[in-house]
Length: 595
Image (cartoon, rainbow, N blue to C red; front, side, top):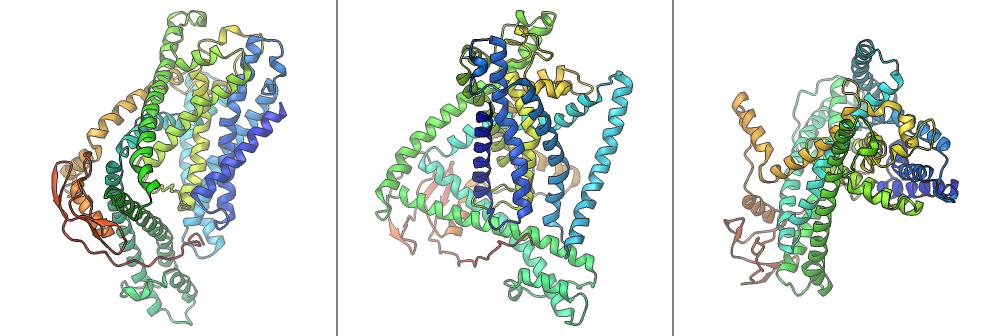
């Protein structure tokens, strides 16, 4: 029993280490950022890691196969209930109180630790006073009108409703987004096109951040010129100057340099945020530019590119991306089918007077688990499949969607403290709904297993026993948890539609009509690629799916091939004239941005 739990926790620590070293630099990030991100990830991964053990142990109790309960995977139901209680409430406290505080602290612009603490507390207290007041009123109304004394279960259900909504919507989008991202980059030509578009978008965001940063620098320069060395405010000015010293010589002083600490705090807060964005998008732009140059050279059969790279990008990578596209599409359809099957099974249950023996289960995962139910090890391993898939689809969707503009979870150790902590809190919020969703996918409670109870006080998994009425969302009852997962199918359908129709264009049109405010018109992709080529100082051959036709080759300072010809981008004729390389931008060290 303890061996499997220790093994799970060991794997969790490894996963946390991998996550932190990919998305941040734990050795240089502030200790409290690393610590509480790790705590959030540990609690989230613990829920996701133990649920297969719970499912396997419950399956053993149901089947009563000799030796099953002596299996290395089996954990007693009472032990699991204690673990679920501790982990759930720790994760609840961490994700709703501790992590939100430390999300506010690093970006507070105050100049002392005490003031930054006060600012972070004040911002969170205001938010939670509003949420708490609404929650108390909501709970009181619910208890009065329903006469339900199980306030404990109601609180659990209400706290998880948000996570369930988020999980279902992100899952539905992720099922479509993952294969779509693969097919967009399946060939070398498509990969080059997408990379050039990335260069354009990253450069645009970088220039916006740079412009905003220089605006703050000009204000700092005004303070630096006005505030004398003997002024009590000079110590604050010195802090601001130290952060932007590399930029001071490139701007003129602007602003009235109002001698108020509050104004300096506001400037400092803006600098902290914008310098993170400056760093992030500068790196992403340069990395994408380097990739585009490499792909361009390979597409032109540049003789200086090593043969193994040519073979990999032209043949091996294309083959495996195509295979992963097919697999992700099939698996995504299975996930949607299983989610929709939850609703179908529940409708059958209601139609048969809540008799689970008459339910014909239509969930493929349920049949899969039931077929392996006599072998605990196979049940344990197989239970991870739907769980891992749902986590991957949901998290990938979170990284891709742009509706959270302040969220920038980036690899190469570029993630800022706010986004890093948000990732830990986000996984904490959706881990319990994901666990319940996994249990429903294999039909615990509505199909294959409930009617085979062995007489326990709670004849379901330990997770369901501890969560009590988590499945009964206030004012929606038990129907909600069984019907709402099918919404992921609707979300997936809209995601497919949005591939061919950009909803942001409709949004901009509506805003322009009712506010009479002109929104910036997006450039066509052909123009974006021309701008990207100017940025990287490169020219490319045809950006279509047809084989590249080399007509002329030249060498530039980067030793990559360069073509001068008319090419076609999605039907638009683009004249790539001779381009010059832009001047190299100076880079800066941003390791202490959260100071």
